Image: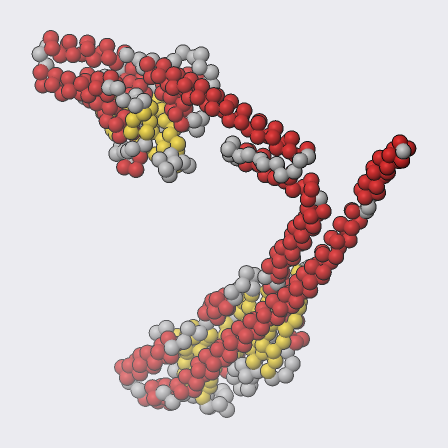
Length: 595
């Protein structure tokens, strides 16, 4: 019997071992592959389909814009050509061409002026016309729309007139300038030429239109004409333009052609779309880097990552389902720890199983209870300590000023200086009222500034006209900002004591306010004797010292109280005033929206 029980006890771990040795990892891998492979297959298909779809849409857009712009340009050039044809019948032009020799000087001048005005009207009718010129052989002059009346440039005219005998090109090129020309009569040049009209096309206007026409990053457009002899573009990459010229020239076949191609140049691929218009022998080419054209495909890549993340989450949940006995209570414990990390100490764990996790949960609850007790004790002790230190620091304000005021008061009574005695006692009363009242250790900045002004009024009576005081207006939205009581007065007292005490005349004291980077800065500076760089450095080191066992001066007192109230971001920094030349003290107070 005992052997049977022993054999059964020994068989139990064997069966458990058999269960643990089932290849769960293999099952997880298979399940992972069964989930991920279909998703990745679909993702790759969507990515490729999206790339093809976006490429197709972009090419359609480029093709449509190319067609629209070149047709618009053709329509405008045809209108310009019709204006030129209509101008052939201009009465003044005909009269100057055949009868200028028998006209009086005044009549000829008036006729030229009227002709120039009509030339200007035609020129102003289109942004694409840079100038409209009429060459009259009988006068051997060129009359243009800019109110010019010049001698004819025979080389310039001869080239244009000779080329105008050809049916093409309608748009002629001469020395990087473009013209639409018309001679009258059409045949018999040079003996029977009556006049010759030419409209210069504004390449600048076309270039600006091409720039507006390109609305995608690194997209460029080029207008070629006259068998690709001339071009207009904003792209200054001449070697790339020449390469595109050769590619476009090989694609243009027949009267009207629309073509698309991919061009490789210096390791980069460009998507190219062109349309050729045979009536003006012009070809508009638009091109852009393929990587820019397919930029929206990045969205499909994002979806691919989303699908991958989704697959990973599914696998996690699948694994969680397998290991739920361990994973679920452990996850609950981890979530509770994270709440504790964020400062939530009122959490508890309720065990749902009678196993090791029940012990962990109960010990966790006990630990949180003890931590709460300890935190409350430490926090209360810290508050009491800070309160005590604040009181001690406030009590250490230097009474030097109080002694001086009584000496001044005694002197004014002796000399019977009653006009000054009345305001002096008023300001002195306000001063004592502020420092002796039983109020909060913190006051609004406007009250602190008012107290400092009472102090300054007392000093003004003491020093008479030797020191000029300049106080900027306190911004209204900082007026109610709380600061430790007796913050500004000790700093101002230092200015008088160490900087302005011996000033005979011309002393200056400035108080200003600045705000930047979440800090309100109160600036107090004077033009007194100041301090050396070594002394300023030593004082700043004392201010930045974290220990309390330092000699407590008025400035260190204010610095420590500010840091007790606002933390390490606040405090005092001392420098040399760049504007006044004396000492400059800056008080930093953190400012928050809720303040």
